Image: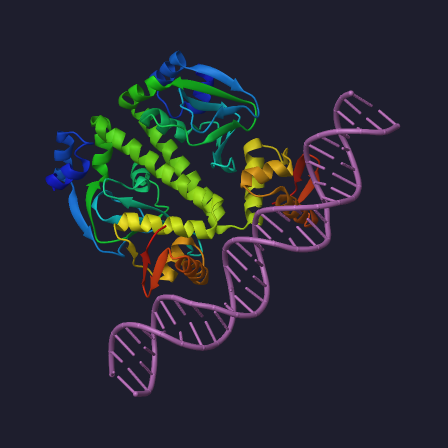
Amino acid sequence: MIEELNNNYGHFFEKELLEEISKVSVTKEVLEGDILIKPGSYIKSMPLIINGAIKILREDQEGDELLLYFLEKGDTCAMTLSCCMGHHKSEIKAIAEMDSKLIMIPIKKMEEWTTKYSSWRSFVFESYHKRLMEAIETIDSIAFLNMDERLLKYLKDKIKVNSDTIVHNTHQEIAYDLHTSRVVISRLLKKLEVDGRIELNRNSIKVISL
Amino acid sequence: MIEELNNNYGHFFEKELLEEISKVSVTKEVLEGDILIKPGSYIKSMPLIINGAIKILREDQEGDELLLYFLEKGDTCAMTLSCCMGHHKSEIKAIAEMDSKLIMIPIKKMEEWTTKYSSWRSFVFESYHKRLMEAIETIDSIAFLNMDERLLKYLKDKIKVNSDTIVHNTHQEIAYDLHTSRVVISRLLKKLEVDGRIELNRNSIKVISL
DNA sequence: TAGTCACAGTAACATTAGTTACACACTATT
DNA sequence: AATAGTGTGTAACTAATGTTACTGTGACTA
């Protein structure tokens, strides 16, 4: 675990902290599609992402969903942070975007480290900042872009996060993430295919140029 | 200043910290409509709000605006926090919603206090959490609500922040905040008036029941 | 091999929101 | 009182998005 921590967080945390983390934390492997956090639940430990990706969603009362952003290696979940620290309930839903490896840190240690290690404080502040910026970027997308542009942005994010120019999703799944209907997505994707920018197949989309 | 700090932040900060704040900070009075922060600017000090309210907006490249949330007494600006700590540029615009009184804290002290006072750390974390939640609430509004519902929510927020059931704004100003056109707002407001929920006047809207 | 199911394509239509254009009313100034 | 400027009301239209309904097709399995 020490080695994996070093690779992903070594430039951030000092040696002693890395050792402390490896002592009190456990590695957790999750599978694509696993639900990691549900809205309304309390959170018992905080994840550091070693590899893979986690999809963070917002859900309204009727169960409608909207993709907020992805977490990748080197990231942590700001919502978890504030839930742990402030003892609030989770306001979001987290799903493994692919098979991923996480290091789970017990809540108790987090507060201790906040006092003890300035690198930990910086990391926490930086995480908050990144998440706030991602949330605001999401606001930009919904407020200022039309659905066709949002779809393009979605595909771009997908191929980046998955390091794969083939997006393995059905139109319905994309529709859920963007909070629209399957028909709308099929329509816009077909237009992108006609324009020669993607290639449509059952259950997958091959991206040519975006 | 000590007294005002005590009234608004006394339950949060310990006595020594309150004294430190009052020693190194200056009071600043701003007038309704004053622009406090522009996107792209660097920030030199952090505001604690004593009274009044500050409107936080997002602006896109074309200058289109969208209201993110209001800051009220007891609040601080999370964007300022992360700008100061992480030395990023501002990504938002801040305008005084009404005449307000602020206490400006020099950046330098902030990092120092983060080490020294646990109450300061809690305050900073809590602020981040609140702002992240406000941003997500804004996402909810744009993603899940229609314009008529967003307008209702806007009016509710306005009368709360201003402690006044008369909203002193033109339709055009509301349209800017919600990132839509004046005609759309006039249309929806007229419907609310017909339904007996508001009363329309030049430059102001009297809220009856929302 | 027939039947079932999930996925995708498409037309027709409904609803919501944005745009353009113009009339009119209120305010302040000369 | 004439004028100009700003704010509001409204109609008519366009564009974007959402909905319903139906078709076809590939994949799996009973």
